[in-house]
Length: 292
Picture 1 (spheres, rainbow, N blue to C red):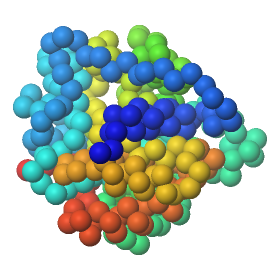
Picture 2 (cartoon, rainbow, N blue to C red):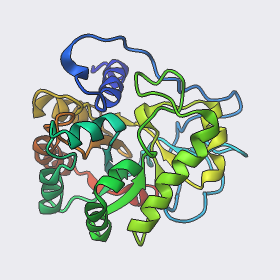
Picture 3 (cartoon, rainbow, N blue to C red):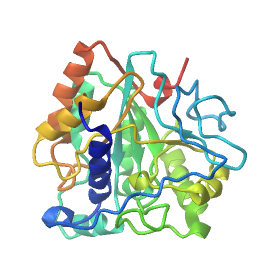
Picture 4 (cartoon, rainbow, N blue to C red):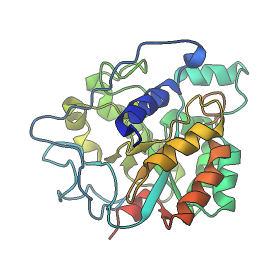
């Protein structure tokens, strides 16, 4: 049987690594992300019910980490329905932007990936950093206008929300709410129908982050199946990682920015989609996944 948790930790490392120049050039320390919740809270372990995307925060229901003064979290959809949500993070950090400006990277928008999703009519939820939206406002508007896609946020510049979130840096506690609201404000200006789905960089959060972001109005979407596409050497390990670990209700995490950080995602998607559909799964957005 596949060592799911071993693969998941490795994939989380790849997700964090994806924003770092030269991250794949040699071995590095592998800290464990701090995902510990306060003793009064818990992450989702059972199927969450309906959770509208662009409306006020959902009320507390079984299967959600949602208590008074804590940010609600969705880890997966109902396990009794053969639906899967493919999600794609569009990271952009200060370092990535410098590489772009200096011509070291042509683009951090994987147009080939979007073309594949459109050609195969695959709905998807896209999590955009504020910095990515600033760099690609026209692309953001174009994606927002496509009925296949829904857009959520991924913080402003992809810094971590704990002190030890790999090497992503850290958002000061006093700035956490403003950071998330900055990205939400940018999305609201570019998307006539923005969602309030949100993803933590690197999957890193703790009780302090959940408390600080409670007033933000967003709902966090977790890392049910990391796709391990960061710095992949070919499409094969991405395909294997996804297909070996998905099940009903899964939320798959891949990347939209491409470039030197996630160069094979677009090549992996066709086989992933064909195989999932052959297994009888319906591909949906996160909103559709969480709807009754």
